Each structure stands twice: as structure tokens, then as C-alpha cells.
Amino acid sequence: MRQRLAVGNWKMHGNLPDNLALLDKVAVAAGGLSRAVVAVCVPFPYLAQAQSALTGSKAAWGAQNVSQHRKGAFTGEVSAGMLREFGCRYVLVGHSERRQLFGENDATVALKTAAVLSAGMTPIVCVGETLAEREAGITEEVVGRQLGVVADGIRAEGLQVSILAYEPVWAIGTGKTATPQQAQAVHAYLRDFLGRRDTALAASMPILYGGSVKAANAAELFGMRDVDGGLIGGAALVAEEFIAICQAADG
Ligand code: 13P
Image 1 (spheres, rainbow, N blue to C red):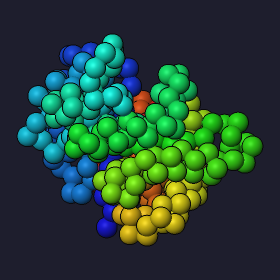
Image 2 (image 1 turned 90 degrees about the horizontal axis):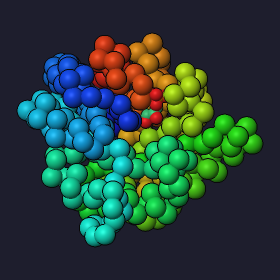
Image 3 (image 1 turned 90 degrees about the vertical axis):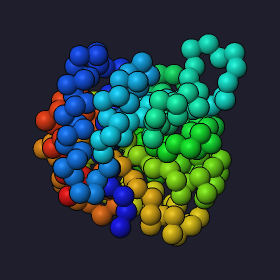
Image 4 (image 1 turned 180 degrees about the vertical axis):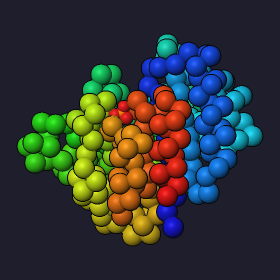
């Protein structure tokens, strides 16, 4: 059976007191789940706080970005080794906000994924099409290209210890969730794409859906055959919402 996950992406939100209240609730809730893994990807300055609040609980934590470089004169960047020192298990790579707002391309995303793997953490590789791309009928071409470049970079050995997230750009923060059928269709395409390289890998790869996941729609989305949980933005900042989503992932 494939791993099920609920991963919160806090984006650039939070402050120390609010974080603590949220992290404490997430820690307790994670303890009550039977199979789903719960994680929160927090802004860099809050990693130490997440580590201190979640150590000893069943919840994991991670980062939202990483440098592709190991070390050196890269002002403002954070290396995978540094993230590892703060106990991160997961690192998001290739989030659409990184691609669109910070100019990350497929090649950079592939290098970042490799950097996360070399530091012994799990990359959560994000792919997704824009509204214009969906309307032009090139969703599969776009997500296939995005995944293909990463897959070529890290090969089957790397993919085996990675997680994939499908986040249609038009559904992020818009309240416009993909229908369970729309999500399932792209997830099935991605699994099939991996299956052309390695069938066992395709069968075991967790593929998360992200884009306006809420407590109210999580169970239906996560009930689709190829949807193994969620990558949650806005709703991950509200304890009750996020916990209900984690429970839906636990199924
Ligand atoms: P929302 O859940 O706020 O739409 O964000 C999704 C996302 O980008 C998670 O990485």
C-alpha cells in the first residue's frame, strides 16, 4: 500500500506565538492517526521552532525551498546540509510560486531535487500547469516535461525516495479546487509516465494533490485512486482545518 501524506506548506506566513499553538495541535493530532504521515513545511527561520515543538511527536517538518549549491558565496541561500541539521525530513522543490515568481526552471528544480537527496532528505517535487496551459490542452505535456527533467536528473534510485505533488497553478490560493476527476486524470497520467520508466516505482510513488484543499473537499479528493494525500497551503494555517485534512488522508 502506498504511503499517504498530508503536508502543510505555510508559505510566508507565521509568527512565533501562533506557530507554537498550531505546532502543538498538529503534534497531538498526528499521534492519533494510524497511517498517514503529517508534515509541515515552514519558513526557514521557524525550522528550529518546528524541530523543538515536533521532536518526539509523529509529525515531521521540512522546508519550502533549498539551494542547489552545497556551499559557497551564495548570499541569501540555504543549503540542503543546513536544513538537515534542523531535522528536516522533507523539502518542497519546484513549487509553482518558485517557478513563476523566482524564475526557477526545470533544470534548477532538478538540481535542487538532487541536492535534497544527497543530504538524505525527501524532496517533494511539485508540478502543475497554468490556466492558460490547461485551456490550451497541454496539461499533460507541461507536467510530463516538468517531471521528465527531474526524473532524468535523479534517475530511478532518486525517484524511489521522492514524493510528487500535482498542483495546478489555477487552483492555488484561488478557492478553485480541481474536481476529484480532474486531479485523478493528471495523477494517473503522472503515474503512467513513471511507469514507462519503472513499473514498481510508479506503483509505489506517493502523488499528492495541492490547490485549495480544505476539510470540506479533502476526503473526496483523497478518495481518488491515484491521489495519495495533499499538499495544503491556506488551510494548513488553521489547526482545525489542517487536522481534519490529515484525518481525511488517514482515510
Ligand atoms: P492553497 O491550499 O492555499 O491553495 O495552496 C496550495 C499550495 O500551493 C500548497 O503548496
